[in-house]
Image (cartoon, rainbow over all chains, first blue to last red; front, side, top):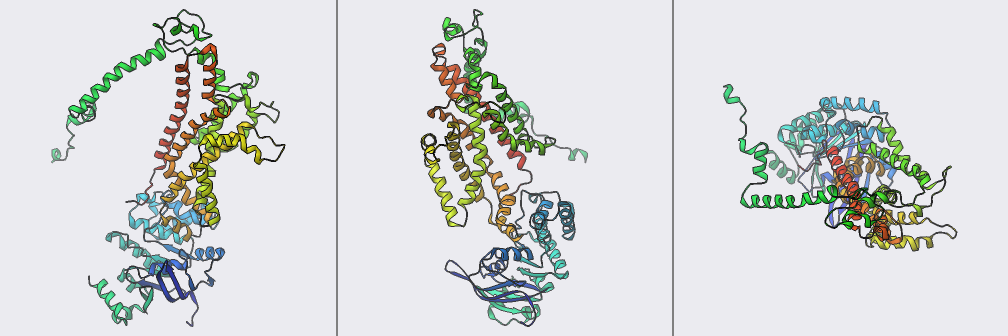
Length: 247
Length: 377
């Protein structure tokens, strides 16, 4: 790639036991680019983005995030994690802390931000995800959609350059999917670099700069949304799209 | 319209006292029969136990009005038909039960230590205590103060631990064992789950070894073998040796209890903490342990109560705790044969403490439940 990449995966390989979950994965992501990754379950898409902030360790190849190569070096890993925010399918809010404490915890303890400043920041982030009134509730008292929006606010409070979304709407009731997607669209329009694993094709068409289709641990097709949806090259992609769009 | 909206009340027969009785005690004929049988047993037992422990009992004087100084003067020994428990033995030996053989001139120090213990527990018991933070500071330094107060030093005359006894020893062993075992247990539990094989193996070995050995063996080990490991010339106090054994024993159990709590924490919690850039220690201190300990409160209190009662085993290495003083009193010819009274009293004191601990755990569970939903729904 000629332009500077903020994320660069080169010949990444990973095995779970004998299972070859990532096979020679190559991906370059430019600053402010929005990538949507899709593919059948078990295709390695979650594993791939979890390698980007080292929740999973890759065994071969190289991953460079914002100029930092991910190796066994703990300091590098910490630095990458400060750059990269992540939103999970199961929200993973901290149930013993209030919404506000969930958001302020990392800024206070990791970034050493004064408490008052962190709380102000938390309220700003809650405004962005449109639930400032829930600040003093506990995660267990919120709906799934609200919890996921808190999770997004929690990641944003660390002021990341890159956001990873691992099937952020898959655990939600249909009625709540839209409220989360709206927040993600706002984020995309604000110029955040995003990699989103999702099956929400409507979302993909609206915001994606590039679609990545994975199957059996390999990237099968990479294309602009227009080409991907209207004129895909591989038969595997065509089959997948026909199943997901005409169910 | 209004009538339609009126709230319908449940049938009378299912609410109030009568409803409760019907549902819980007289639901069908077997249920009623059991209820009647239990009432009959209570009717037989309660008057008898009240009479024995209170109405016919001697507290200080026997039924002739004489002050009791030995077992022959107890009403029930003077006249077997007349008289219940002879609590005078507790009255006469009360000092020993509470302080052991602590010198009488210095006993105010123990009293202050008891009062300070209550004060130190206060902020743990009442979360809403005003100025709780400052009370907690006191709780942290209390062990140091208590050490100098009880043992001597800093201007206090030294009172050798072989003069300590009774409730004093029971509380020192119980409180120190529980308080020290908690942090050690946490470290062992984290260590056992560590990804570093050397640490994990060492912790596992330690836990399995200590758990595999009876407490009595550990006590003998502390008494006999611990001095062998120390450099020559350093003489370790007997009570300290026992304390080391008790603490090691308790921390192994505590470690397993906390490990159970750690295993209940979903992996997503670790991942979320890591993705926010938290280090191993921050993640555990701020996210994982608070949740794991919360889940483990019932078993933590359970093992703590177990330890509190197990401290009575120190009698075997010659330290006289509450039960030890009781046994000693029984061996005194003056008080021969008063085992009911003495064991009843010792049991009651243990019960008061352990029941308090159990209520405290219920209170904690209730307090910490606020808004907690571990995502199991």
